[in-house]
Image 1 (spheres, rainbow, N blue to C red):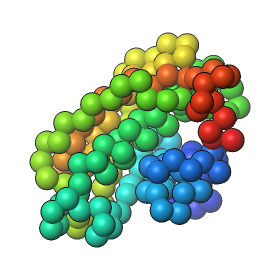
Image 2: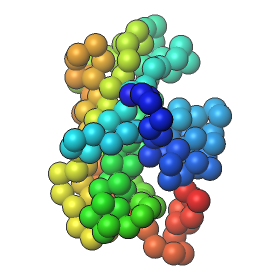
Image 3: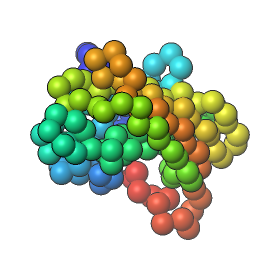
Image 4: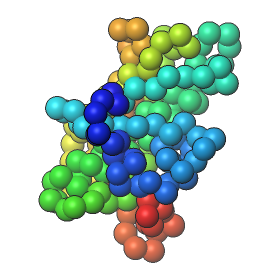
Length: 158
């Protein structure tokens, strides 16, 4: 994923974010890095020992966080593109669900893809897939909404 001078959407648009899942400024967080792809965003994540639920398998909460944050960024970038703005709106999760389809192993690179399935002026529904070693381990869907001035999360990416 990290080839050449390309920077992740998180590093480009929210370098001071402290979000546990996607904040570049949170040294103890997951610091995911999402990149544009043909149908949305994609990312890779290498899990650590502390991300295990039981020996050799990733905790479901870590999986949920990866899908939630990546889906949120997928929606935000799609909303930015649709409105032809220079920066993405700050979006928050209205709802999301995940399906843990099989245990997710520690010993592989987690590949997550997000694709917008429905979009309006201020919200987007996103489908997410997490694969390890070519196997789909989790899928998810979320609804992400752009917030306005006055919402507690409005300036969180600045």
